[in-house]
Length: 148
Image (cartoon, rainbow, N blue to C red; front, side):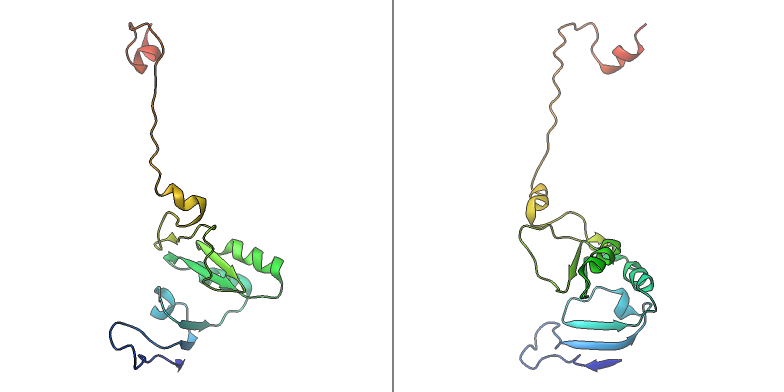
């Protein structure tokens, strides 16, 4: 049930923009809960226990980001460790730190942007092997292994 929003803003007629929207009574098997929705959209899904909530969060082919809101920071960190996403914000959402790696799990992508890990995406590693053995009677690795 769309409880607020869901309309296209009058000043944004080109593209696929919607105003901030809240859906209530969402089940985890519904399309709105299963697909990545990029926009100001909140789906309210009821859960019975924190384990149930973690299971629902992880029951997805995607894993870009998620959030945990709590006054109990140590507890929130323990919950965040169990959520399989590239980023988990605690008491915040979508604040990016250029020093921290950013990227998804599962079908939300591989690799990272930002931070030292992001630099690895632009790195090509080369291995150069030098055989300093002057004896050319054994030319290949298998000559060393299988020679009587």
